[in-house]
Image 1 (cartoon, one colour):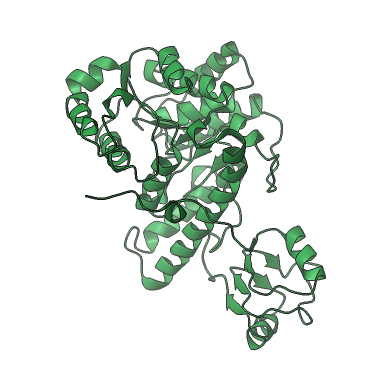
Image 2: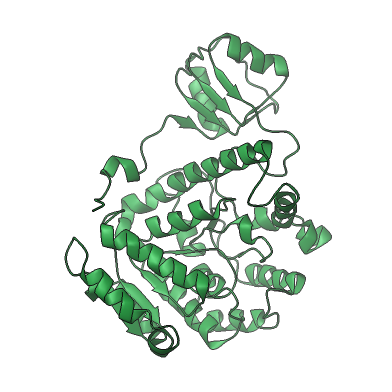
Length: 400
């Protein structure tokens, strides 16, 4: 019978990574970079640092740009390891921070949906084998996704230290739910209430229920009437397959209801993004869907498998499952497997919105309850809750 892995296997570990130019310059002034990892920095920009006198034994420079090839070659001669950024890729091979909505939407104002950074990366992904890339592309994608892993650990560290792992709540559900529909409005109110209750809302970063939950968290510091007004504006472009109108409406709502600017620097006070949209974890495997532009931070991966596991690993404070189809059902039982075996530690509540859907149309409860009742950690079936009431769902998730 599987047992939980040791804590040091699943918990983020302290690192010796340098991910900002300011931090790099401070270390450089000390004259010793031994054993450190310098990640994704532009060391070719004025003023380029003088690396000729610093100790670099065992230092790893990954995805960094230097003023010349000779600089990189000299670092290798003096004991450093250099993994240069791959040329010809539209994405960074070692991103040092999570994406922001502004970064994914860059280019929309000039060239519409097809000109967005997010769309251009997806076009490149498709042109180079999609989910089965060639070796060079695969290496670039894996380095990118590892950088996202690191950035995600950095972005959530301060939140978890302040609020604990049980404060992170996942929201799953159908991607095809139209804006303005009853399920969309329910998911938006859910995200709004959770964020106001100091819960970090985490979604899969797609449209439909996922966008709605991030929208609610984005407007956490606005009134319920303003949330309704924002949804009404979005409802003018309800269908995500109408890419340009869908994206334009999102950007207009962001502009009208813009929260205060959120700093991107690392640090214990960098928590405002959680109440300015929460977290989204999408994938370019589904890049035909428009980017969800309401999350405060976006951990966008190429690997869908890594992305799904990441969402469920983070959501220790419970998961809300709104009506959905095969993808949502897959997530239900992937989450149940983790809970059954205690893979990531204790789990929060499983809240299923729309009692009729989950008992009649897709009767998951009848299978899930006996499964969790047989967990080696005791009867976990009481963690399952079915409701038609968003307010009840929030009460369950914030009871602890």
